[in-house]
Amino acid sequence: QVQLVESGGGLVQTGGSLRLSCAASGRTFSNYVVAWFRQAPGKEREFVAAISQSGGSTNYANSVKGRLTISRDNAKNTVYLEMNSLKPEDTAVYYCAAKFTWTNINSELRAYGNWGQGTQVTVSS
Image (cartoon, rainbow, N blue to C red; front, side, top):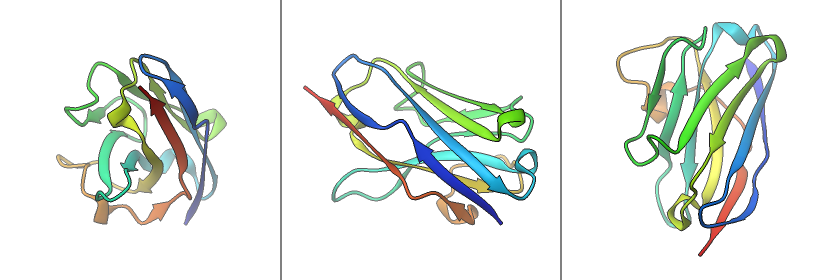
């Protein structure tokens, strides 16, 4: 098991930027694929981005491509989500999650067995 703690959320205006962090503790962090998901009020949790164990491969949801960037620093046991050109529809609770295996489909929520508690991102219009 790996424990995950998100931070960096907040209130920002349309067009603004935020950087979310996902700090890990417990098992060897570099063994895990890490993803960001988000859940808006009244909606299902949806995939945002994923990064492979080494950081050499990434996946993004079409809705965030070109605006959000996932990265990781294994020496710091941390994954980041750089968020630019934010829109009101990006408002949600953002969760990081971890799993062992990088596959062709890394957007499946049920594949992730480790989750953080979430951090709120609110984009005002």
